[in-house]
Structures are given as C-alpha cells and as structure tokens.
Length: 413
Image 1 (cartoon, rainbow, N blue to C red):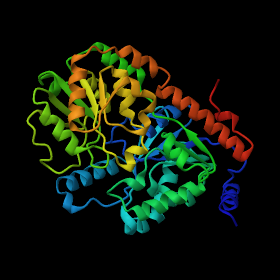
Image 2 (image 1 turned 45 degrees about the vertical axis):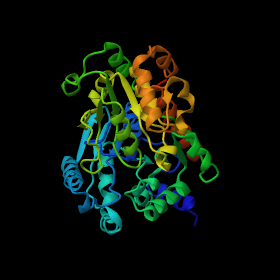
Image 3 (image 1 turned 60 degrees about the horizontal axis):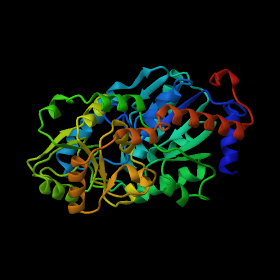
C-alpha cells in the first residue's frame, strides 16, 4: 500500500476523509517562550488563528546541547525546562502554544516517539482541533506524520536545516527527505531553494517573509532615543538585530569593521552562541536578547543598520526577516551580498570585505537618506497579506486533496 493510500485509510478510519480541516497543528522551528517572535511560523500562525484554532508546538530539540559549550549549555537547558513547565497555554484568539515533553537526539527520539504523538493529539483536542492540517517546520517532527492523523501535510522549508552546523546532517537530511516525499505542499521563502527542489516535491508555494508594517514604520518615524541601554550610547550608532551565530553572522568581518570605525558605537541585539571574548572592541556593545515588542524601537534608535552575513549555505537559502524590518524602520542599510537581496539591492549598500563594509557605513552616515522609497517598495509585504494569501492556498489544497470543504469553518468573505 502506498503512503497516500495508507494515509487515506487512516483518515477514513478517523472519520476525516472527504472533510475540510478545522484547525492547524504546527510543529514549529522555534520556541515561543524564548525565540524572536518575528519568525515566519509565529507571525503566520498567529494570523491564521483568527479563523481557525492553531496549536503551535514548540520546537522539538534536534540535539542535546554539549557540555563543551559551557555558558550555552546551562542557558539552553534552563530555557527549555521553563518552556516545558508552561505546558499548554492559550495566547490569544485561538492561538495555542504547547511545550511537549521530549528528549533530543537519536536516543531521545526513540524514547519519546511513543509519547510525543499522544501528547500533541490531546493538546489539539483541548484547543478544539479534531481534523487538523499538519504543518511541520522542525525536521525532528518528521516521525509525527505517522502519529497524527491529518487531512493534509505542509512542510515549511524556510530554513536549510541540514546546513545548521550543530545538527547531525545525516539525521536531519533523512528527516527532510521523508517530509519532502510525504508533504502535500512545501512552502518556501527563498526562490533559489524552491527552484533547486522543483520536481522533488508534489506542490510548491513561494511566500517571502513579511513585516509588521505599522509597528516598524511608526517606530522609525517617531525617532525616539530608544530603550535605556542604547539611549546612553554615543552617536553615531550602528546596529545589528538578530542571532549572532557562526552559521549566519561573519565574526571576522564584523570585528575588523568595528576596529576600522573607532568613532562609531556598535550595538548587537540578539542571542549570541559565539565563544566568550570573540569581540574585544570597546566600541561594541552586546546587549543580548530583547522582547520582540521592543525590536522596532531598538532599530529606530540606530543611525545605520547592518547585516554582516557570511557566505554559508544557510544564508544562500534564507530570506532574512530583518531586511524588510530595517527598510520599514527607515534607516540606511549596509549588508553583504546574498541571493534574496535581489529585489531590494537598489535600496541598500552592498559591500564585501572589511574595508568596503566600513567605507559603506561611513558613506551611509554622511549622505542624506530618504526612507519613504524603501517603505513604498515593501508596502505590500505585510504579514497580514501573506497570511491571507497562504490561508486561501491551504483552503484550495484541502479542496484539491479531498474534494470538499467544511463550510462551517471557512473564513467569512
């Protein structure tokens, strides 16, 4: 029996065949309680929950943090334990967040597989979901496709997880291959990755990352001094907002640039997984993670915003959310080159190498900048529009697969 036929038999036995979906179970790629809430699955799922219940399952660990990481080990374990202690929480509307009990790695997967599916099914019932559309972002959720009956399976391919240096590429690669072979639809944010995998999956949909236009534009126009830890910094200020990780961020480039611009104060806002002491420059302030609600205010307090990316496979396949947030805030942007920049190249300064990057920052600080051109370019890139488009696509997908929809749960026109 083929996987499609087997799934059809399961759905029929559960009373799901020929029906629409009454909610979404999202196996997320992040943890709601401590990751930046600007991520694709957070933003999209919160909006889809306006029409149907959504159960967001916090990321299932791919690996056990190593004791060699020292400071990172205790922090990661502590954050995860706090998340687990919250259990199932209704956040807003019909958006629910669930932290299941599970263990990372191959051994942990074997130990928890028997319990993970039942935990999620029970949480889904409490959220009012009986006929779910199963949405998977985290590759470790691959075994759940056989544990959670669903009317459709969607893979969120907005990150190249197999390029994540801390994951086992063989295990992660196998999970991704399984998901691509079983998914009814694969959602991409990067056209390059989508083109590379054309013909490898049944259906594809491109939805580039969005932006909370109202919040970020308002913060940029207000030109407030910013939160206290940046308001006390001298000007000019140059900021980077995002994860400071070796698979995306370019530490040698940034350190060299900071040394070339001693008159500039650099603020790095975001979690950092690099070794302690990686950046000794006195004009660099590592301010740590901040609540998503404050990110626009941090961006607006800068004179220039930067993206010092490396040339990794992860960056080549990504579509950085912060690019559109930077443009909406309306500050000059200096960045290294990457494929997803193509549509916005004329709105930013692209520089490769420390000298060119430092020179581009100097020019951005000295020359007039009109933010309205950038804001006009991204005026149709709001998260609301992205979610509406995706919602219609999911309706069409389920109709195509099962030939019927549950009109009771269809969003009003």
